[in-house]
Amino acid sequence: METNVMSSALKQVIAFAELIKSSIYALLQVKKLEQRLESLAKAIRLQWPILISRIIDSYNRMKKDEHKAWRQLNSKGSDVNQ
Image (tube, rainbow, N blue to C red; front, side, top):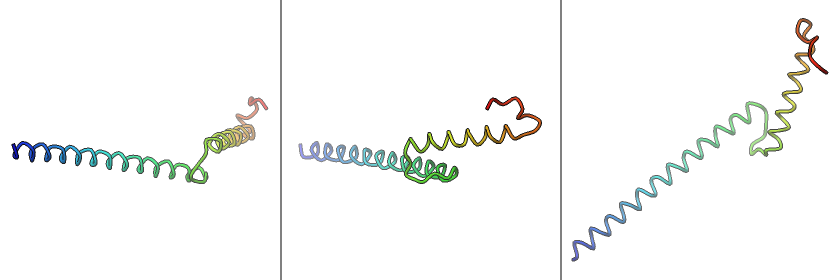
């Protein structure tokens, strides 16, 4: 009887350790993703943490700048709608 109780307790400890291990792994993965997103934000000159509205504004600004640069090309910009 005592052996069954110890065995059961050990199984529970092992299961709990596996749960903690997988939780820590998941947290590390989230941290890696956050670091990558922060790096990408810095690459396009956005402050971290970032808001969705800032991403949209930045995208629209970059699109507008690209359109402006394209219009200024002598050979290709003549067909760009203003």
